[in-house]
Length: 117
Image (tube, rainbow, N blue to C red; front, side, top):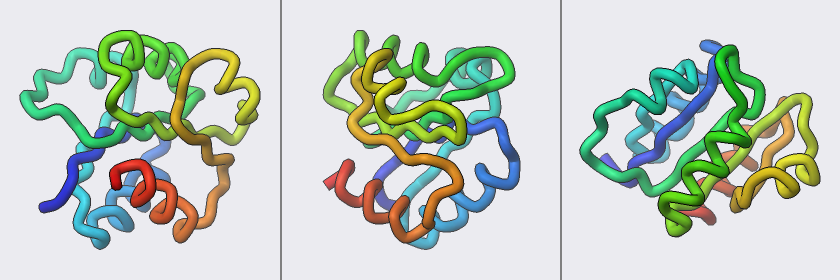
């Protein structure tokens, strides 16, 4: 497999599509459904990219982004949301990019390729 991506997305359908599409692009996608499972994961390898949803059942992806950036600012973060705007995300965390849901799969691939290049 290629570069590793950690995906935090509570919607199973969206999570499955992202895993499939990025898997076909030779990315190794490790998915998490909740902030709790994401934060408790005992993962030994550092990812090349974080993809985080904003609205989650047990927390907020922007808070996760801010915490990740405070720990290691070198790993890019792509935020996604159907509710928050790019301006909302920029005001809360230092995400490297933002995608509004619903999104075009080709745009997702393009953004991911750019962020991990």
